[in-house]
Image 1 (tube, helix red, strand yellow):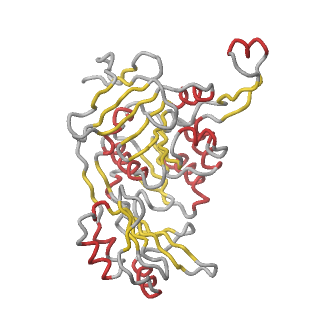
Image 2: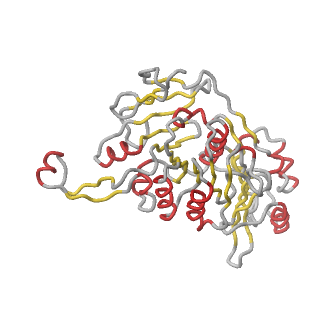
Image 3: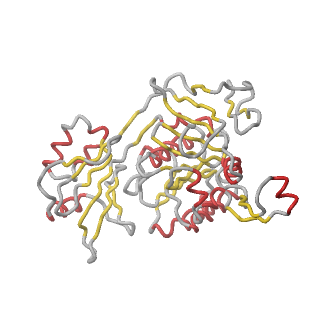
Length: 375
């Protein structure tokens, strides 16, 4: 079997399979790649008023549809498309109370996080309520099962190390988690458990969507209980891999550390556009090892040519790899420990840029300098 070499920092290449000793600065992981999309758009359109349904069915851009903000009471319904700024009004007539009520009857029950779904699909419906608790707005987001994103990091999965994805909302983090669950459970034959707080990864209903393969799914009664369900999964179900979306509280960050210390591989996501956002976030910084202020002695400060008070990483990071998802097909991969240490010392770490070329091949480029803004 041919080896895949993943170079990090200034060290020699580390082999996943012991044959190849080094790789060029830029290389393609696969000779050809393809993306297969299953969006079950017909079920999504069923909850829309008839005129909007007809318009979107005949829209040549329907495959780029991200979400339809149809239910802002008293405003015209609006559609948003992938790669376009702003939205597009679908009609001039304002959304009525009757249309709000009709849509609510066709979706599942709204949870404490004001999210619901359509059973058997990956679509997400989020509610806006007034002060009396009545729904006055709905954001209907298209959920897609996409096969092919895994090519962007397939080589990293062989390490069996934890991976954290950061990126702004809508960049595709949950979509990647869904495919990773399928590949790790079906191809790598791992015992995978998904902590599905809003049923966004496995879809609405008691039977999870086929997009997650053989992975098991644990639903969470309330978002505030996510950290407890994470620990419960480890204690009761013997997983080799835990997948969790939207890590956002200190309790969840501590649960992640506890899970990682038990030898379980973690795959998670957090909001933020780059590694620096996690470093500066006091709630989430424990995911990358935590930050503390250290006072150096005079000799040490002179040797380092630094101030006496410096910032250092407290502990080993929970996640061995951190991937910044700048765009759906443009990622920046860090080896977390080395990147954090170099950034705290005011130096630019070495990272890998993973992207697709014009032929949709996955290309990895090594960079020696990264300033966190752009490459």
